[in-house]
Length: 106
Image 1 (cartoon, rainbow, N blue to C red):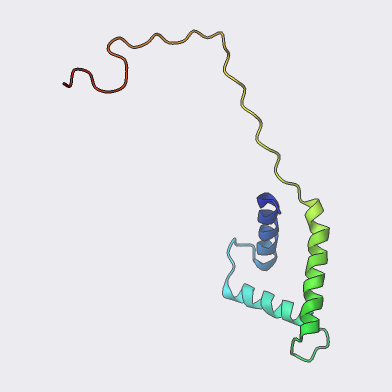
Image 2 (cartoon, rainbow, N blue to C red):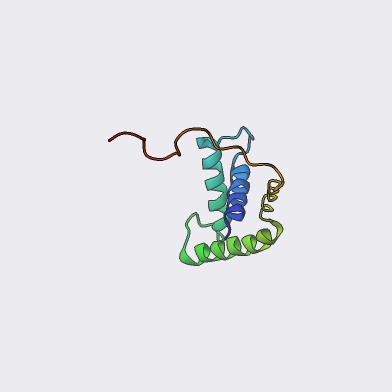
């Protein structure tokens, strides 16, 4: 995926976890998010996750991404800078020896 789309997905996930919207994720917010995800994944409510439940959770996450990604648009490329006008006179060369190695060093 392009960088801009991955960045937008990460920012969405960050905003989802940052429940108090202070721009930081603290331990309470992260723990609450992890517990919520665990409870959503534990389909049979036996307080354990098995392979089938994890597989279904991954499939659900993939389906959610397939729905979200088309709504995300990469940022348009920056507008090209106009070329400088060609009719401007070039500055006169500086008087003295041409640039390069120091002169009269031998």
